[in-house]
Image (cartoon, rainbow, N blue to C red; front, top):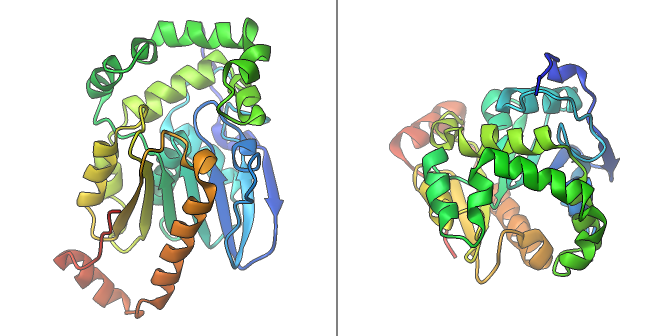
Length: 294
């Protein structure tokens, strides 16, 4: 298999814009998803004062799918080109999209105002990811690169059309889009972004004043809850809402609850007394902030 050299920022991502508002709400799907992940349910993902941008990540959905190494930097470069001109962004990401939202905020802190990270997989390295999935039924497939690649090919060419019937617990659009990628984009993104990247170091590079809300299911078999809680414990401006009995897909299972938590969080942020940059830096240095775990 030969990977080609392509500048990711020259590959235009699929983007759909809806609504009107001063700020831009950017929704980033997870591995194997597309922009339809956010639009297939009974509740529109909308926030007051925001227009919405739905993006297909590089290698997924209707975006280009070149045979390249899908590193964090390539994903972020493509996303940055897609968001060119935006000056006030709230990023909401699910799983892979949550990881890339965090990476984007680190590299473009002047643009990103807030982060909402849904079901962020934080393992602490490939070895710990293998340990985690070894406890899950059939989980070894997800930590063996060649097995993952083979599963991707089989799902696309053999059972792709049957996925909506085989996965009745998720919306038809989401099941259909599980094959809207290729072997390289799926496998490479999984290893490069979720397994091999150090999200502890990445999160520590975010400005301490950047507000971050995490939404995580207590019964998530894909992204360990303990990993998300570990990240929250490291930062004064991070909060987490734990959704009891929910798996890796809070937005598909309890969309009303997800929006309620996000809107309450935004209201709380708007009510906080503004301070000047020097005071913000001092607050970050002394660890002033609030975390809420429910």
